[in-house]
Amino acid sequence: MVSMVISPFIIYGVGILFEKYEESGEDTLFKFIENEYYKNPNTDTKTIERMIDDNGYLVTPLEEIAELTKSKLDTVEEVLSIIQSFEPVGVGARTLKECLLIQMKDVDYPIVKKIIENNLEDIAYNRINKIAKEYELTSCDIQNICDFIKTLEPKPGRTFGSSSDE
Image (cartoon, rainbow, N blue to C red; front, side):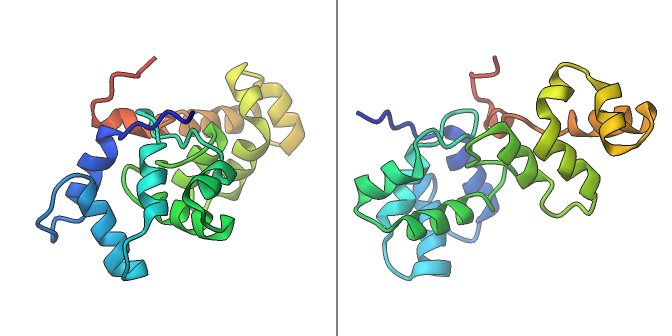
């Protein structure tokens, strides 16, 4: 059985982002998606929102969501893409890597994206010299890049007062 959680950050964040709607909470999210994208109620969106944990991560595989909602996988992926465009940036990611890359979407710094894609474990273990050799950069340059990456929010849900900061 799938554990479904309505995350407070989604409800709060969407309410702020789309103040033009009178409704509050999850209805605002669904109204926005219905009005702006689908013009009809969309069960996929409601299901996906309930499967995002308090840290902001989608915890259920898309294939399972498609099966539960009797939807095409492409439709579920499209809805997830819409949800990932909301604040806080990084919401709806399935992995830390995806979360950080979502936050880097509008940042024109290709080396940072490449290091996020390929070297997160090296960053976690402070393997600065290894990364520097791999990209033919100085240790100082890599340290600056790592410091920048560490400013990104690994748990976008906690920006809205989640209790899962661990």
